[in-house]
Image (cartoon, rainbow, N blue to C red):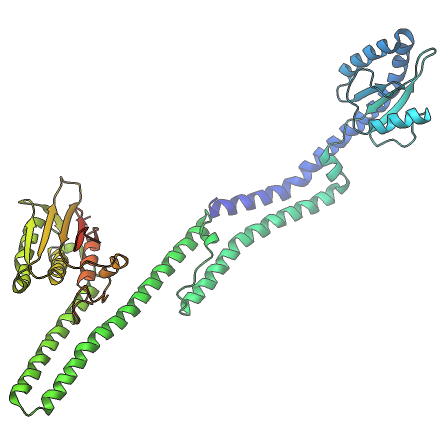
Length: 456
């Protein structure tokens, strides 16, 4: 139940209960007590009126006539239970004895008189006629209603106190149902503010079907997202520091060797190495900046474009990297495949995936680009496959994280560990697409990219 309905109904019930309970219950009690009193008086009168006709029926017609009289009398007194037992203890009409009747009949049989102590609500009288067997008439009064027995002794002030107690319990339940979740959220918020990012609200509270449950679930999702973001930033900072340390260390070594060397040829070699490391460092910093800018969404750069032409341009420029090792690229695509997207961002994403495939393809290998462009309304699919060593199955998701280094089989020392595939994943996500990698059945890696035709 929603929280506002719970508050409204609880207070409404409390007000109704406090105002009307005394009047309503008290009037019902008075009426029930009057009815019970009148019924008891009628039963007491019936007791005296029943003995004489029962005795006459027994004297005139015997046990059979007494049984017939009992059946007829039961029809007239439906709320009063009548039973007649013979000297053998049997009920003359074959009815099952009422509760508490067996003890009365047994005492009557043993002592040949009606017991003086009888259970409350039960009356017993003997029926005697000259020349006839004596019988025992047992009358069960109707029970007093339960609420009369429970609430009757309380009186008006007792009922008022009971109403106050019940309304107080309802208000206590309502107050606890609101205050406890708020206290839990406050405690979790304090822990989160102190830097303990693993702080969460009790999942049982988050499963409540009201506003507080929704708030607790949102808080947990926020805390989880915040923990991932902060952890990711810390990890990224550590990875960036590690990646920058290597080229900087090599620069320092080359600079020291160049300064100590008196051979012009050796000095030129060290300066050339410094230039290479500087270019690598500049490229790495550029990738880091590109990855950081991906969080800035710019819908104004979305334009209609032809994905087939874009892939053709990327293939033509990227294939130059494979020529020294005789690695070829092949594109299988339709003549046209119009979509809507950020051309620069898609170019960077697809180029990074293709360059990664070229980098890890063996000498004389082949990289294939397949473009599936179905009818409008369906997703476009780009599949890039290589013939490299593949990726361990447990690391297929990790290759899209920044600065992830795989085993030595997937690249030589000094390569990989960048943010190229991470940039590709974020760029595809910004286009509301998906990217995933899987190992081919024979050899190599297969990267599948799905993009919506219209980015909205």
